[in-house]
Image (cartoon, rainbow, N blue to C red):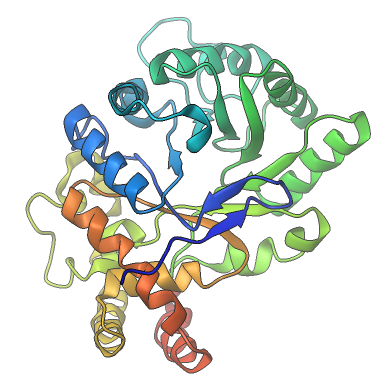
Length: 331
């Protein structure tokens, strides 16, 4: 019998998110069409996943369009699933006058960006919205007021940040507290066995101080933690994509790939594979509200969902063995 999906509160909010969720970065439109997205969303939903992550910049809006078309085909009751999107880079990359519409969190951009995302997703509201990166050129107070106003208008229900520093998150929270605005509830950081200091050290005080929730991305370090890059860049992989050339050195790092090979042995002892072990390791962190999975094929998604069976097997002794291999190599 397969283990049941568990649900966790998103920070201190009352919203319950599935411990594993499904994202769309790189995959939707680029590798996954509407039909494939529909199949994967349905499989995830049937497994208990209730949270689906997106961003306006993913495939320059096309990812939201694919997800929106899939939701329409599936016809789920809206209260049964959670959708997010993120704002910062904008999608109008070629127009001559785009100053207000990319690489910013100013009020004009945000108040219009939400309308574009809702149209592409074919929804009247999204559940979560994120400031996709910090904007050093816009006062945090302006951004906080705009995000809070989007929620007040009913176009989103909760807001948060992605890859903000602890000081920036705390500043935003304090502004919202002072002006009785909607506070940031969650942060979406990269978190995996080789990228962990921000989650484990920089944010450490925020979990208790402001009740920060985490929706983490890149659990497999862009595929490194699947073991597929131990012998180079395989054809058809994410690392082989031309727009992902910037990550090839990281994917072929000899020390990390050696550690992945040793992790495979631990995973086999527990009855799983290294990808499932890596996802289960994140899932075992009680500070993580949900682990966002990425998949380009249905079989890959189904395999990753197998991490649920490994999570309860991660005893302190197993976690110590994993740390001994990976912590010295982590950023």
